[in-house]
Image (cartoon, rainbow, N blue to C red; front, side, top):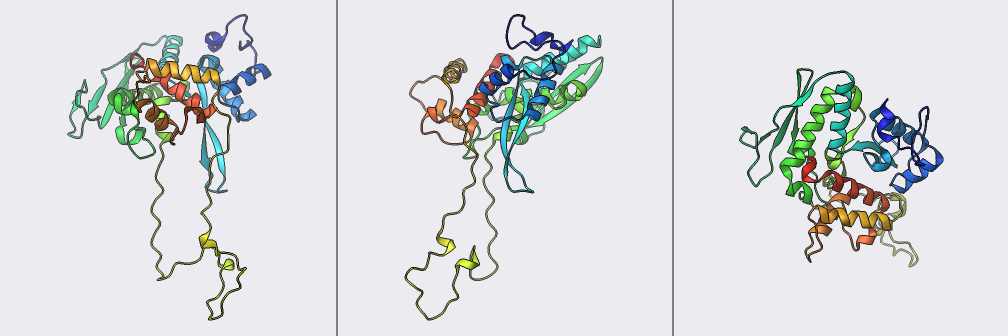
Amino acid sequence: MSTVAIRQQGTALTIQDGQTEFSPGQVATLRQLGVEAAGREDLAIFFHQAVRTGLDPFARQIYMIGRNQKNQRTQQWETKYTIQTGIDGYRLIARRAADRAHETLGYEDTLWCGEDGQWRDVWLPTTPPAAAKATVVRAGQKFTATALWSEYVQTKKDGGVSTMWAKMSSTMLAKCAEALALRKAFPQDLSGIYTAEEMAQADNQHPAPAPAPEPAPEPKPKQTRSRRPVTPIEPPADLPAPADDEPAEIVDEPGVELITEPQSKMMFALLHQNGFTDDGTSAQKEYLESIIGRQLVSRRDITKAEATRIIDLLNDAAPDAA
């Protein structure tokens, strides 16, 4: 059954046969891995996907990422969770599904396309490709998907391309195309689960649109009740400042715990493995800022949830995982 991959005899984290939800001890461990704000309903969905896919949530083969989104109806910030895995997790799920069905599974060569519209089986230009195409062959049937650079590239707060996507543009885009093709070939097994490469764009910082010019010659006050009609009489000295002088309300994400010591050690070990050494340059800091979407005064300012996201991306970004 699907739980074989996540049963490890003798550990407190073992998901047992017949288990229907995470135990209190397992939930406590998951909260240390960055899902401290997840509710019971979100954890129930996560448990179902872990059992269904056979991926180990405690080995970070499958994980849940919370992102703060503004509810357009209530205008309140809400945490929406996405269940993610790396491209290797996607490949493993597809391979197991094909083996269960006694079907063949293969790939055609990945292709990249530039602005000239010409497809190539290797990408040599120094500029990023405009698109990548992957084809999965399941039981002789081809499932092709194309990923566009403009739709999936991860950007920094200033709008520039993030360090990993700039460094390995063809690899990252190819992973997105492969994930799309695998999900088309195995919809029953991969629906509701996304790869870290696909979801990198969800963390992009989009600049706010420029406000439309006021049609009236004079701007309207933000709060009319704080304004007084214009008269030749001097206003009282103790009159409060008009609302226009008050700073705009800043809506920010709710506070979370800061990075833990184990997370810090793991994060810097993975940074070194991925070539981001502390050699006096700002590349390491810029990479971290590109992931979390904000500037860092100190690396200790990284939150636990942000550290989890960084570790997940670094685990999935190794060139040999492509």
